[in-house]
Image 1 (tube, one colour):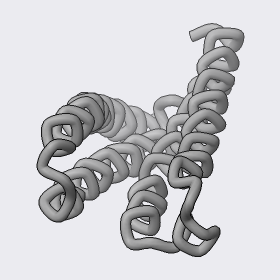
Image 2: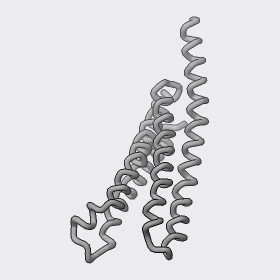
Image 3: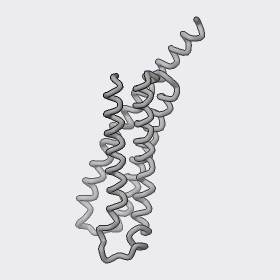
Image 4: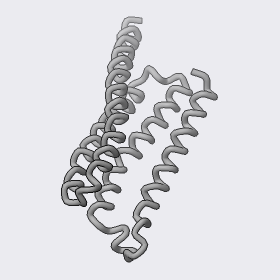
Length: 154
């Protein structure tokens, strides 16, 4: 892969991270009548912040993986670890979304269809990312194992 392509993808990941961080910090401002404490320190917002941690860790690992690709170090154990971490982050994010149904049960009945749709919109890409990470992790692990066997026999 060309160096310019990996740099472009790294810039895209950084922009996604900045956009997601801005949304996470801006979202509590919707309730204009609430105090600062009520905006940022309620149970739902705390849960949303906890759920965003795997998302940002996964973005960071994808950024690192693109760096390995740009330096032609894709067939290394570090790349396999980055993909494994991305897989775990995607699965953790899916778990956070699944548990967030508890907040939907306690909420307004009219908000449930929209909340369900938003959870589906977030879950399906996470499933795709987890599946792709598993597939690429296995391929890279096999390649790293073959490379290490060849290095031992030479």
